[in-house]
Image 1 (spheres, rainbow, N blue to C red):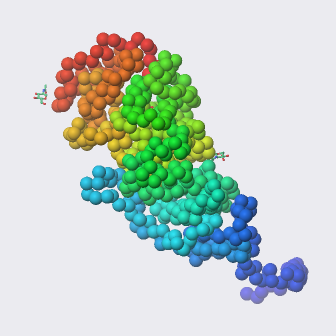
Image 2 (cartoon, protein in one colour):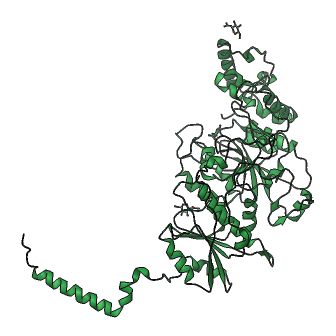
Image 3 (cartoon, rainbow, N blue to C red):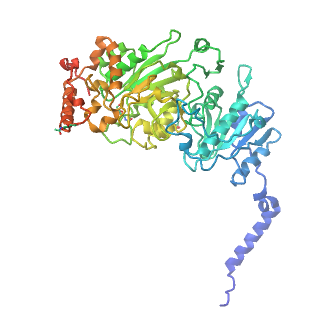
Length: 559
Ligand SMILES: *[C@@H]1O[C@H](CO)[C@@H](O)[C@H](O)[C@H]1NC(C)=O
Ligand SMILES: *[C@@H]1O[C@H](CO)[C@@H](O)[C@H](O)[C@H]1NC(C)=O
Ligand SMILES: *[C@@H]1O[C@H](CO)[C@@H](O)[C@H](O)[C@H]1NC(C)=O
């Protein structure tokens, strides 16, 4: 096929474009031909934020997980930094990549040998840089990986490298404060919010970078914790020693001395919402905390958050039991079905709003304190006892209130769909890097097999009454026995422990634990069914002597 001669229009266009190109070339020949190979000499966009805050003549920048050989974009970051030499000295922080086969559950095992029957439980070490080579950086620039989700070992490793680098470089007193170290996270992946607190965020350019100025005391505190929950924190709370607001307490110092150095504001907090069914539980809880108070040196508040469903009469009792009261609006779980038991469970998130406290130990109202737990305030956010898999139980938590964290949590309630629909599921999606408290600090009353009484340790700190609550049963026996599917929660021994606390309560407080006729009828019905099923444990045969049956509650509880 013969080719057509080019049309006149085409020739004219050709002519113009060639002249234009020649013209441009003659004006700025290099920029057109060599553009791609030219050094990027722009200041990094985040540099202004840093420069405003640092007056050093020379700024040392440590670079973490930014690797031009793996990621083309990363060339630019080095070029921009190199262009600032000698004002800025850049060094790449070397460390070995964590073993690819490591899984999150290796760092967050369900069970560990807490009693050290087989020796001290060990954690798998994540490789860290050789710190001696990298002290005294002023800025750390890092890229966090997030392609594999937030329960990714390498993501944690990068965060820990950055955090430790900050501590190694910044943990030097200059005048009256620590040498600040700034952190810049490049890209779209946010750092681990448990390690880099929103309180320390200076600037965020969406999709580009975050700039942090971490609080060194808080960060160092966290870096003293194990990498995961593979071991208990090294003796922290047990011995009443801690690093807290910059006051390192030496081995010989007593807790008394410490509290005279800095008196932190601490509180035990619980929440009641949606019904008055747990008022009695909260009263017993307060009594159990106060009954185990063995110090005269400092005070720890007892604060109860209550929504509108907790009536005047109940509030009176709760106050008299020891709680200070704060009224709240309950919080809706947007993913819960209307009218379900967990529809308002996010009300618990309000504890982050209590910024008048440095730290809080949150307790559900179906917990009972058996031994003083004040020293567990030494742990950082978020510390809790294990539940199952890699998860913690949200019935008892050490947390640090923060308005921006509350806001962040509220934002997340709209996006994160929790695994079990409750606050525990939600919080475990957010706080994936948590610290292990001993099981005996939140002992879940739940038993496999037939050892429902034996398993309970003598040195328990806190019992968590899963299943039907003691005050909803007769005091004669644990009514979880009345239903086969609840046998796993049944323990007469644990039941007795609760009633022992009840017996120490003043009569006017015991009144809040009275049976209602409705509760009584419900128990009788279950007993009848247990008898018909001839349940082999035989608790349905017990002749009930509970005196509460004779004195129903005439106050109309809203249950
Ligand atoms: C929460 O979301 C709002 C609206 O999208 C946003 O303006 C705010 O910055 C977010 N807050 C936090 C702490 O993420
Ligand atoms: C939600 O709260 C209710 C009542 O406060 C409690 O019985 C229930 O266990 C909670 N559910 C979850 C999943 O946390
Ligand atoms: C109930 O169970 C016991 C043994 O647990 C048995 O001896 C008895 O015959 C059973 N009664 C009925 C009515 O099935």
